Length: 260
Image (cartoon, rainbow, N blue to C red; front, side):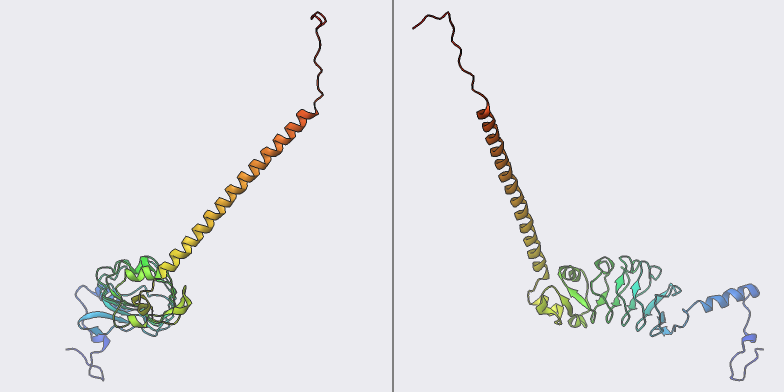
């Protein structure tokens, strides 16, 4: 018979011991203890493993997340950076919520191992100024980037071309700063849809820089040619003055020559 506690549940001392003795029981308990990161909750999520670490004051991504996690919520924490390989063991991960953190930098291989399976990545409400194209470009997941202090420039525009943005939040992506000041505070997608190209400004700036450089080289060549000509003229003048300064030698008369 199994003894019951005062609440009607089995007391810990009355739990059946797995076949194999105390060693297997210890391993069984350790496995149960490691099934969920410390200070997090792991509720059932449609029969899959879900890990909820929301608002736990975390400053980095936990390293003991179960490998079979399907849903991972790390929102409302104090995470400032996502290092390379932070989720590389989570091959079954489908949804990753990193919203409402302080993320400023993301490693180029931060989401390695998630390219094929991840369906939703939430990076909204962070401190991203630039989009890490190397980290996000390989993902097939829908990505949320709203409410980040993005700097609207050519690199951002080119990065967005390679991303699959979440249509429900894409209109909330705005320019916090911009190479074209008239678009500061305005929705980025709206500006791009109207035909604005931040890359054209970049190209114009590049063209101007090339023209200035070419003009500088041309001016240097002209200056050298003028200097060379003037130097040759000065050398020729000095040589002429030297020849003029030489004493003239009178022509000697031959005494044997017949008189005229």
